[in-house]
Image 1 (cartoon, rainbow, N blue to C red):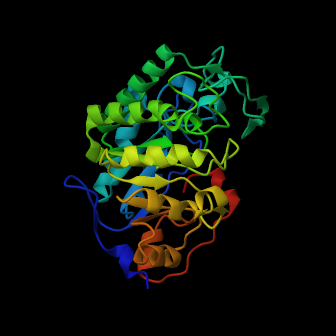
Image 2: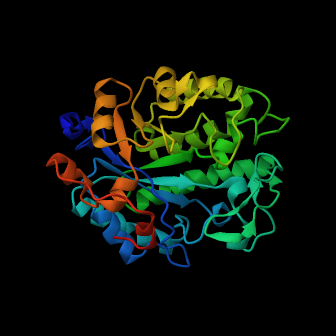
Length: 347
């Protein structure tokens, strides 16, 4: 019943995937203190190269984008050299890997970069404390100025170029899960009254500028995007967000990206203002290659692909528990069950 997962899939003229299983981006907080990928990370990714596509753990584009301990960066030469070891190992095992480009926005913390403030669309703090470092309370961010926004756009584009130089096959812009780009797209976190707020067109301006700058630097065929229309994490949903994403996704579709990736932990959750599941909304709003994610098994993912709900399925926690996930599914072998204790080491 899972045979469809093992068919090749052509993203575009430059990239063909050997199967329809993607490894979801999985933040592991295992880089060294300079945010450089380690040898353990090299082995971790190389073992999972049987996936049609590996999407790297979220990788920060510049120091003030950091919101969690030991998350890798892609802005220093040491970081690029570390990632080159990863990409070389993945390619040696026949895999393909995209870098997920990340800035956490108001979910960053000055502790990580010895800064005075974090940047966000509006000066509205996210309530709570930093995961893994509960002593750190989130701060009130500085509202990004036009100069700040222009610099961020350039830094995303440079990070994309760095990723290609480090051997990645492409990049996925992290525009989901309540981080910086997503914060511009939701009314809960965007209270601006200038050309970056209030209307769907304005709220989409910065995200689209990032996409266009990345395309200009590395090409649309090597550029992808992750989105979270439901606004279910790090911010509160607002029914008006639907209008923003109706506009935004149509603009994204015109850019001919490699793919669009759903940002959900559980795709069975339904949202009234989206008319049901996030994947269903995305399929209606976006006609090109779509990666579904959020609690799918090989079986349910294959069924969803066969039903045209999406084109590829991303698998998360089962890939942590089973480095040989693809082989186990292909040969109908039992999977090792994921356990939270597995997060303590890279295997």
